[in-house]
Length: 189
Image 1 (tube, rainbow, N blue to C red):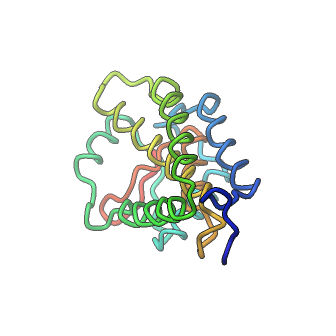
Image 2 (cartoon, rainbow, N blue to C red; image 1 turned 30 degrees about the vertical axis):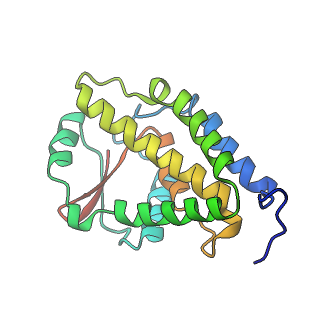
C-alpha cells in the first residue's frame, strides 16, 4: 500500500494513535500483578491468553493457571528457551519497528517509548520482596507494553493486522503474569 508522505513521514491513522495512547494511559491505572498466585482467572483473561497463544502459533489448550511467587521463581529458572514465544514476539516487534522507521515514524515511536519508560517502572513494579523477580516481572510487562505500542504505531503498514501484544497485555492488566512455556505448557500466574 503506497502512502503519501509529508516531510518524509507517512500519516498515522487516528486509530493507531488511539491504541498507542490507550496503552500508555493504562500503565498508571491497571492492577499489575495484583492477582499473581490467586486462582481468580476470569473469562476475559482466559480469552486473552487463547488469543495471544493462537497469534503465536502455540496450542492454547496447553495452559496451566495459577502459581505462587515462589513457584514463579523456580519456573523462571527452568524456562524452556527452545520452546519460548519471545523469538516470535521479537520478530513481530522488529518488523513493526522497521515499518515505522521506513515510514518516517521513528521519532514518533521514540517519543511514545520514552513516555512509557518515564511512567513505567514505578507504576508496574510488583509488591514482592525478591528484587530480582520484581525486576524481571516489571521488565516483562514493560517490554510487552513497548512492543504493543510499536505495533500499534505501524499497524496500518503491516500485512498482519492483529497486534499479538494486546491480548498478552490484557492478561497483565488483569493482574496476572503470562509467564511463558515450562515443560511444554504455557504458565500464567
